[in-house]
Amino acid sequence: MEKFIIEGGNSLNGTVEISGAKNAALPVLIATILAPGVHTIRNVPNLRDTRTTKKLLEIIGAKVTFENNIMQIDTTNCDNPVAPYDLVKTMRASFYVLGPLLGRYGTATVSLPGGCAWGPRPVDIHLSAMEALGAKVDLASGNIVATVDKLVGTEFEMRFPSVGATGNMLMAAVLAEGTTIIKNAAKEPEISCLVDFLNETGAKISGKGTAELTIEGVNELHPVDFSIIPDRIEAGTFLIAAAITQGEITLKNVEPDHLGKVLEILEQVGAEIQIRQNEIRLKQENRPKSINAVAEVYPGFPTDLQPQLIALLSVAKGNSRVIDTVYNDRFKHVPELVRLGAKIAMDDNMAVISGVKQLAGGPVMCPDIRAGAALVLAALVAEGTSVVDRIYHIDRGYENFEENLTNLGGTIRRSD
Ligand code: EPU
Image 1 (tube, rainbow, N blue to C red):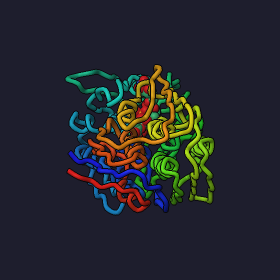
Image 2 (tube, helix red, strand yellow):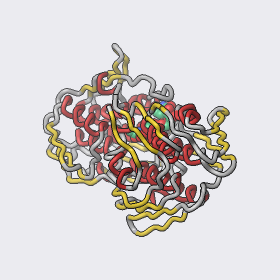
Image 3 (spheres, protein in one colour):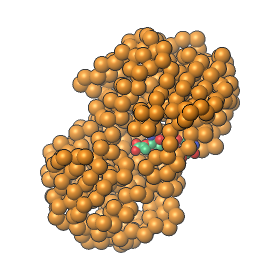
């Protein structure tokens, strides 16, 4: 298994080009199933998860090429409406095929995702959304088997504004008969990116970026040339990398509007931030200040940056508290950070962090993508050598992570 060997202590300075957003790319790539023909999707990050999505599309019957961050997908013949366990177990987002397959073929067999690294992560909202559109949903041999003659528009209120269930329902509803209204829908920029993609293919969706999405069903969609939005989580990770090492960084190809709360929190921590069109510059001159923060649905502080924020606050002056309201149990990074000398106590879904002046390097293990990124950031500021194991998690979500960190002045190398 590959590991990162990291020598801590250098401040990170320089420029990073931000990639396309993983969590916007995955549903858009899958949504191409809805519109038969050849799509060109640009700014697709070259990650384990996008390569897994390519495999999934190929199993379903699409012809796919992936070069220079451009995925070309021919969805003319997608006649195997199946997402097998082997793929779903490595990437839960495979579950996104449920809506488009039901929309185009009226049938889908999708392996039921198990728990994830930090908890159960149920899919009940996805399933009740499909049922609300008229599908019959059964469980057979670990697979969700959904069938319908024709999906029919409906009004559906999400009990929680789930990103995945909103995306799945949108993709199912675009080819349904009549109008669908999704209430308490997710407002994340990745969902707005999916709405833009679907509307370009000929769908009729209004309410983008709000909690109420209205979808007027259409008979058919056509292929398009589309570009994925920048990755706000990759951007936030590099901003925190500069803040934790008291460096100065410029991010290029970012969408500052998607990072409002993140920039606000980093300013509270003491960072100086400048924004210019698609660029963000951050400079952190002193030890971070302690703060209290809550990870919430968008436009709140993202749960996908909660582990990196906890790493940052572990070296802050004073005591901080971080609550996660999206995933109550996403704290697998905490015991690993404690191995590096962080002082963190858990109280339910709240981490209570007593900042220490200096972390000390050591061996740690990545429990998942963002927790892994947080451990790398902690190792970059810790004194001495750290070995960060199980970095295949990080490879799911960060393109050229160690190259980017090396260019910024970090000492990090990959080893078997
Ligand atoms: N939930 C349910 N039932 C459902 C669906 C969700 O109870 O049917 C709960 C979840 O357990 C969780 C909350 O609702 O407590 C939010 O989950 P959501 O469905 O919004 O998350 P997701 O769609 O499974 C996406 C991202 C995650 C990110 C979350 C929250 C993708 C592929 N994944 O997951 O990204 O943390 O939204 O913003 O878009 C990551 O990139 O590291 C990652 C985990």
